Amino acid sequence: MKFTISTALLAVGLLSGCQLLDRSTANYYEAKDWVEDGVFTQGVEGPVVGKNGVLYAVNFAQQGTVGQVTEKGTASLFVTLPKGSIGNGLRFDRLGNMYVADYLGHNILRISPDKKVSVFAHEPAMNQPNDLAIRDDGTLYASDPNWQEGNGQLWRIDTNGKVVRLQENMGTTNGIEVSPDNTVLYVNESIQRRIWSFPIKHNGEIGEASLFYQFEDHGLDGMRTDVNGNLYVARYGAGEVAIISPQGELLRIVKLKGQYPTNIAFGGEHGQQVFVTMQKRGAIETFMTEFAGRAFAGFY
Image (cartoon, rainbow, N blue to C red; front, side, top):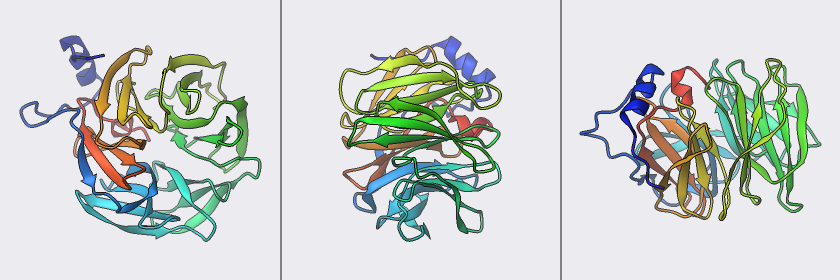
């Protein structure tokens, strides 16, 4: 469905604190390469942008690493994870700590600003923690698929490292994100092609799930929200990012160069540059959007 931003929607974006780029200099929704093929492994995932403006993603050059991208085409090793750990989703908290979903070690790792790596949470009952979302208060949520069985779980990790299972017997839980106002948790199921929304209570618990959106084909992977609450969904195998309104309306499809996007992050000078990790290519693509990512309104 083709979508044109209306004057009213632009006004909403401005009121919400979103900064818009000069339309004369920005080509919105045109995917280009940011990091070329083979710089990361086919396990490239979990993009996240720190307060320093640096883009991070897992599995730079080899599995079990986190790489950093300081500018277009310039990537290097940030840190090597402990032996037996391979990262997937990444998130930052407000203090600059990076959290890593270590699917091989059943851990949530924490990397301090001085690059010290520690186990923040360990849960043997996890299948393979996949992606992470984080609330303002530092509470983490983790998706946890079991690809062989075609099902999955959903976990909360409190700021003290306590792990609480919120849901089990879901589909293959994968992409996960929190709304800008911290009241909704979005979780998708890759194989089942569904996105669920859960109301988030003040104590971090979640309410009853509602079906937010159902796709007819291809898989689903990482997700992020912008400052207006629109949900950006990596469509694995479709070679696209779907943008869905908070009301569950498909607003736009952004075509990518590769077919296998794994995850999404916002960054750039005004938070309006979208980075997309590409599995088969071991690369990172980018495009511009009108509205800044949620993190650039003070959320992480």
